[in-house]
Length: 115
Length: 133
Image 1: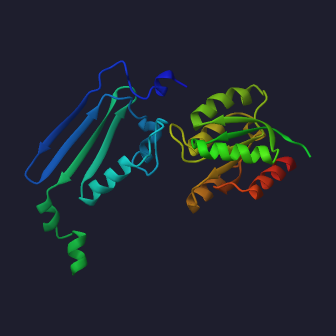
Image 2: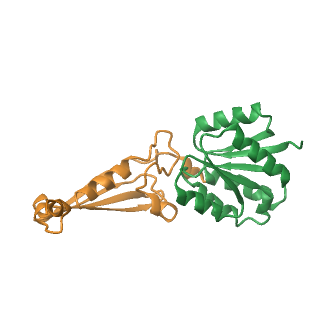
Image 3: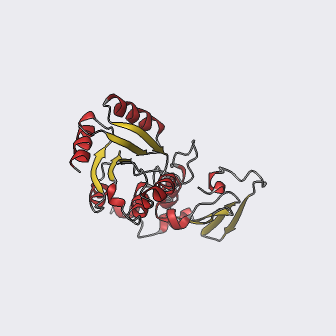
């Protein structure tokens, strides 16, 4: 196994987290980036948001966080995407639409249930 | 009765490994154990052994949900090794999903699918299966 894969964090480098927010009238885009060890998306892309899926063998990894995040984002009619490069870092892009947009949408399930 | 020389357990769950090892020891199932915590560790160790025809495990107990490289990815890698059929693979997973069970059947190197927890009955089945082979 590649020694770099075994490192849980890139200790030789300072951790950098950044968040970028673009807010439009009805929509909100946010990017969350780190410079961590990254996730091999070629291997794991299909299960990255899956329940109990972990990717680095960290002892305290539970495989729950991304699963819940995706569920909650989608419950708010949002979208979440991931970009990652091994040993470079990971970026999560979250797209949320405005609350007003949510309730005024005629195709919305809540409205449909009342009918 | 021929005893199994080496049994290999591929699982990331320490408690499962501990329990299965104890169970195998009580049953006097095999002489030696090989333990790997994910598919990648296992494939990196087993590939050269099988390719060079060296002493390799007779039985592999394979978990499905593991970090780094999961059970399916391990199987996909494993069937690219020449002479892989010498080794008998049993999937031992906590998944009761019918799709997983059907998918496992598609691999001809997988002999059976057991749902955790392992029972002595399933171990007996493994024992008789390996000896028939």
